[in-house]
Length: 440
Image (cartoon, rainbow, N blue to C red; front, side):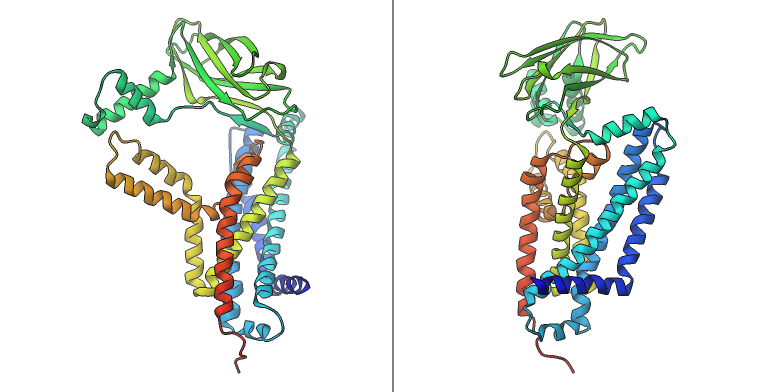
């Protein structure tokens, strides 16, 4: 173990001597500060911090990830090309020790860079907030120190809604062209979101349980109505699915404005499973879009969020290092660097690819060709999923709690398997290289 630490120390010192580490730290500070000050919102302190933190942290972390890939590829490839590693392998040091030592050294460089990035972002946020009023500062501090969990209703898919709508009117979807199918989908979604006068709409929620930290849950509505001048009037009811809990409140809101209702913790079932029913008591129909209804409640604190962010991003960095070193062992630096960067960018683009998959699977009749393309895209996502950065930046920058189940049961297993496979391949390739003979 001492040999691993010694090689890691030597790797860090070499990056210092070459100026690599200072250059990375300067890039991190300058880039995060520049983006933070360039980004803009509506002038409200909380909204400004949300946008500035998101762009500053997100873009700088992505750049740091690409730097990590390059360093990992260069660290091992440069020593192979310069024959420096031949001398090291001539000593009684196993190749596994060399590999882990260099990997740990690069990981320490990135950990230091990550900590500098976080300090830079926090410093920028603190300096910017000093210009706001004390009340705004207190609201912002409360938001970020007490992380919230956001919960959305369980919705049927767009395709299922459209098929149900077609079945209701005895329409044969296989005979519909693309234009008619899209028009039918719009009508189905409108019907699902529209609440006529004196009618009710029910939404089902499964929060996964609500901690005792939450003294209340906040229901947020965004209404749309035909008459812009008339207020939306109605009643909201909460009913427990597996328990007799009940809550009711009157609603009087303006359309296109966020309306909040606070429900006491005692009125929420312990298992967190319940329905919300809104009854429209106005004279016009009103619309609650799929993004127009959310729940939120306190579910943690800044320190818990900070720990999950550091842990997940350090694991992500280590996997990128292993993959980069694996590619650097078998390929030239330029090819290895390009290959791993493309894999990383594909993993980052998963959201875009998922939208394409959803659109291709939304057709009235899904052909064999569509199915083949969808499966190929899903396979591409699976191949790159291990390099996918953890979905934590957007949450921590808006004061939303990072879900532990997502980190430990969804993201971590895929990333760990990916890293383990890359590690085994890298060690096998390293062991098979003839490096013990010194070159004169």
